[in-house]
Length: 433
Image (cartoon, rainbow, N blue to C red; front, side, top):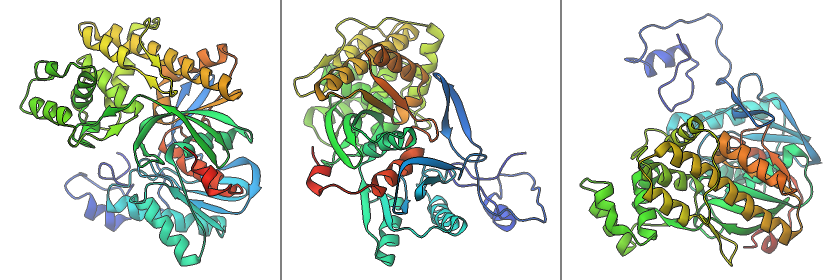
């Protein structure tokens, strides 16, 4: 017996709808004469470092208020595309909705709209501002734009990784400049690019991009996110070892992908940390294709955990003059040592943690900032987050992590709401590169 929903869609809460949508899936239906008022998934937490952290915030916790460090006009923030939530604020309180889910089907899009209507009615909040992701094609962004236009309200688009770091600043009560390591799969950048491995300077609505992970091509575009072997092929090509692609990944597509990389066709660049995890998993022979988001990274983490502690590899990353972090030496080492994937996974995590801490510490000294927030879905990885936190604290930095909201896209709406609530700085400063 379980709650009722087709895979990837919101919970079914109406009896007639259940019989229609679950025909051929459920063997029987247990109904009740008391109707369900609202959808609410199970909450999911795990122990991370000194305290538990949310993977999904829903039943039992949402919409419990989160206290903000300052009051401001009421905001409706509509979140992102994956793991969507919405957030409402009133005075110095934020109310994060239960998990809604990925907005890749009509049922989930309707659920977002129903959730917004229900929360507005239940909390009796009349928004004065509306916030959304910078990406204009998300259903959440389109809904936010329509909602704002119908009511004559200002619409405030917020860059994806800015929102990740702002969510942590909001719940930790930080109203001073801080650095942010924002690591995830992808988010639209201010330059229109595919961001995902970002070192940011954030002061409320003000944002500067201090650096990013060295760019890798995405052969085949979004398809590379579902097929980690393509990211391994991209890494080999970037290392000048493209001739190895057909041998390492035999199959009818290997030569085609190699050709795309050589000609630079359908290979948009990305700074995504998630895609680096994919490349590492495929180079170690762990996973060539993924059945669900983050599968390769989670399996890489699990394999590393079975090996135990490892020391970072020497001379396995570079900090560039532009402030970027180049992990190509690490990827080259993985490509040369595929025979022991367990050790390779542990060394990958240890080296990545050391590289990120070194990168952020250099920036903190340069910017004279002592606070740093760790945001984005990659920080659900316990091995990575614990090691990065430990190294940063040893370097004298105050580390802040998501505790009241998930660090992944489930917390985006909180960050969007906090930025939109604050007095907005001049546009040119907000969009500073």
